[in-house]
Image: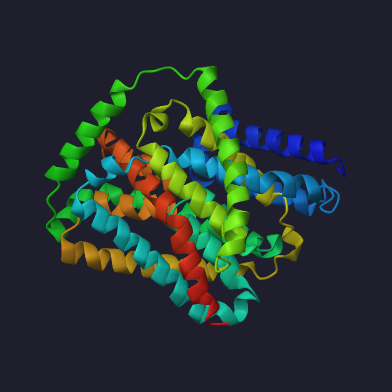
Length: 391
């Protein structure tokens, strides 16, 4: 059993790295089909929860190292991730794409509230906190979920249910959308959608992305890491000061808000164009996910079926609302599906779905997903507080 804090952190990062590299090591058809169902991020969730359950490390002895690293890395990751979100580009997507995105966001929020109203009696005490964190993830991404967990101080034991719900329900939903988008001709004909605008925008963004041929150099890496850690440290201090003067938000919430505003603002400056934001933010994201998953003991998860049922209720409500809106607003399947997955799947899967429709539209999927990072944390916190009213 690992009791040394540094050994615990080193082991987590190494295990996460191995799991991430598995799709590059095993390239057979069977293996790739398995990785489509269980991508590396799911393997990290499940793998480290299993290792925690078999007591590979001592939770009490390693708690100090976990506490010291999780939030600082989380805030740095959120800042670097937001540097990729240029709001000027998002405006170019046009009203229908933005309507589709926010329709997906609202329907997901409604799904969480309705599902919790139905299931709260069997989910356990404080379930609204973990569901609020997961709602942030399904509106934005993993960074939003972790930010909300920190803001609401969600216990690891409760988050374990949300992580399993996220892994299974979201993975099955991605598979469903990858299948559904193959029916684009029939769907677009049914909704009477006009696709020429989104095709033109996608082509323009693809050309702009192709023009960025600057290599990733080590100077960029250390600059981004240093900037991210500095922003994390400064915003934590400022968050504590603001909380003292304006206590209606706690320290963690103020810190997240400061990091978000700073990241979005700097994204529209030359600093946001530095090569390496995606690579560095992904590394930090997987480290934080490994940390959070390492504190969840599966032996205490006897109530998982109720949480999974809640997840499928949320997705069913979301899909029904999106189909109705697509018919009413004449939205094409690309707009509907990518808007949905930009919320639920984030930058890891939305570009994949966009590329399945058309390789020229991959940048649209990325930008749509990045918009989720801007609203995911605030949206998840709002939904969490609404759910808390049910008890």
